[in-house]
Structure formats: structure tokens, C-alpha cells
Image 1 (cartoon, helix red, strand yellow):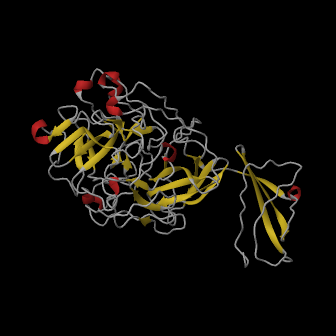
Image 2 (cartoon, rainbow, N blue to C red):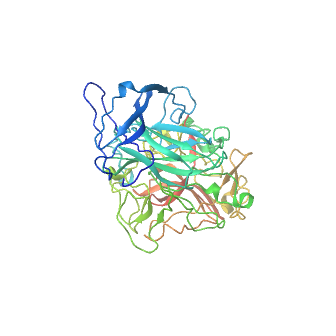
Image 3 (cartoon, rainbow, N blue to C red):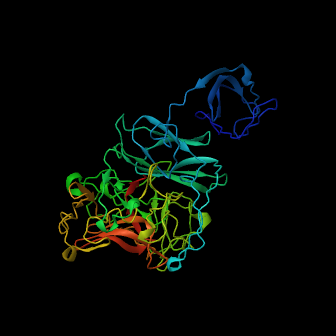
Length: 488
């Protein structure tokens, strides 16, 4: 610093206080004989709490502080632990956390991968060439944390790493709540992303608005599939209202490649059929680049840039590049192995009577997971659905008219759910991440299960003006929406 600077903060982790002095180093451009009287605050933090020591001292080229003489005070941690959403003391971690109160500080564990669950391998699994190698999380030791992207320059602020937790604040706008989406990443000492978390900033009462869907009668013998409770909106959606009632695309939510935990931004609000990405901002408040504007295919990067990369990810890099959409005409599956257990439900057949489990790559918040493949099966006259003309659509209200409006479906034969025409993100061409496609008359939602037709196809809901397919298969590398199911 060549001139006097604003308050200087030095963060040190893993220090054991005792008889030996602790040395901190920084560089300054001031003269060697410069001495400045400063107010000095030392914060000592452990997982049991924090103590603040305050005093005065002279800052010189070599300063020794005797903190024994400083005034001490206990710092109360009034932050909300997002891994304990119901406050019962039972921690439940996830890759997405919901924050909904302006002026509040939040925290979540920074050392746990997703929900921390170990998915056992199934060496005997071999459906259509797929594998079930299992998933083993490890304990992370991050060196720093910051916003990777967010939908407003100061949607979340004061991100810091402390006591093995990530802390952040929702400042609001002059006390007014501002909804949006953000991703916070943690980094190792070299600047490589270790993991990242989606922060869904919404004040919607997601629990109170759960919808209990009717499963098809053909599955009545299987108790595991019955009465699935789904959120009333897509993951990352800021509303459940369609364009006709809100003049926004807020109900479309975020997009995911099947089996990945990382969200991709949706279309902006320039039109109901917009093919332009919602603006996002990095930690400094700068617009994130949308790359490429042409058919180039850059390498993977940790930078806050939206990229469309014609390379597959490896297992060790699944979490390293959360803004890189895997593309390429032959990259049907974004991973360089055909793992069918990434979202916790292998293709075992109806008689298995299981919806599997939540994994460390599941993108839903605590208490929820990606919906099972039978969740919407009761809407049509066959489990897998089909064309409206041949199956009838008594539960589907406006199949020919949606577009500016959401598709309306009687999810239990009576009450109505809104399903937005999200469109999709193509993977086949490296220049097709932006714009989006089919964003005016097609809707897609992933389920938690891979299909049984190819090793690289997963099961999804697909609807358009002619069809409502509850178990269609689609390439895992497509970008589709997600609707989260309450874990029983």
C-alpha cells in the first residue's frame, strides 16, 4: 500500500495460541521508519464461539503486539444455521440453501460435500452399459470463500470463511427483501474451487405450499411411490406465476445437467420466449462473461464466466467448474464415465419399490431431493404418459394454449399445479448454451433416475402442445429444470 488504506484485515486459520509468538506477514510501500498509531482488533474464533480483543498499537515495518493487555469481549453469533432449518439441533447439509430475510446473517458448514452421504457401489449393476461405482465424500479444508455469481450485484454480501463455516448476509435494498439466486464457492490455497453452494434467495413458504401428487393406479401396490410431495415451483424459481400474470420468467427457475449439483442461469425477462440469459455478477459486482459468443470451446476455468466446453468432466473435477456447461455433439453424458447413481436411484424396475436416496450431488435444499420418476405418473391414463389426443387430458387444463401461461395440471385430480414452459439448454453445439431453445412451448423436468434405453439417457418429464410424457428419456447432458420432492 503506497498510501494510507482503509482497515486492513489479515485472516489466519489453524493457529494454536501459546507461549510462542504468532507471526503474520504483509507488504507495504511505506518508508521503513514510518509508524502509524492504529486501533487494532484481534478476533479469536473456534467452533465454540469467538472472542474479540481490542486495543491500540503502533503499526511499523515490524510490530509486536502484546494482546494480553487488550480489552476482551465475547462475540455473539446471531447468524442462522441453514443446515438446521427447523432449529431442532439436527444438522442436514445440502448443495442448496434457502435464505429469505433481509438484514440477516446466515451460515452453513464449509467442510461437507453436499449431504455428506456415502453412496455404496453396486458392482453387479449393468443396465444398458451403465455403472454404479458409488460415491465417497471427503472432508474439505478450504482456504477462502467468495461469491462466484449472483443475480444482483449485492444480492448477498460479506461472504467469509470462519470456524469451518461460510457466512454471508442478505442486505436487502433499504430494508426491502430482494429475491434472486447466487452461488458461493470455496477455494483451496491455489485458487481452485473445491465445492460450491446454490443460495436460493426467496421468502416463499416452500413447506406450506407443498403439493401432494397422485401416483398412477398401476403403482398402487408399491408404497414407496405413493403421495409424493413436490414444491409448487421449480428449483431456483422466484415465483410460481406465469408471464401472463407477472411479466417475468421468474417461474422457470434454474437449469441442470442430469446428475450435476450445479445450477445454470435461466432466460431473462425481455419476453416470455426469451432466449437471452439473465445477467449475473461476480464478487466484485462485474457482469459475468457469457462465453462463447461464437462456436469456440474454451478449456475449463475457475473464473466467474459462463462457458460451454466441448470436453467431459472427470470424477475428480465434478465440483471444480460449476459455471462450465459440458457440450459437444457426441458428449451425450457430461461425465467421462456412465455412472447411473449420481442422483441416487438406479434403474431397478417398478417391483424394486424404491426411490433410492439423496446423494452428495443432489441440487435440492435440506429435506428435499430431485423428484422420483413416478411423481407425476397419475396425471395421464398410462404411467409414462403420451399424446393428449390418445390418452385424454382431463387433468391437464390448457395443453393448446400455454406459452405465455404455464401449463396447468390437476396434480391430485382437483388442485392445480403450474408447470412452466422452461425450454432447455442444448449440449450438441458448443455455441448453443446461450441462447436457450424451445423456451415458449416446451417444458422439461429431470427425475432422479437414469433410463433403461441407453447408458447416457436419463428419465425426464416432457410436455408440449401435443404431449405429456412423464417418463421420457433424454440425454443427460441437456440442461433441464428440477422440481424438488420432500424426503419422507
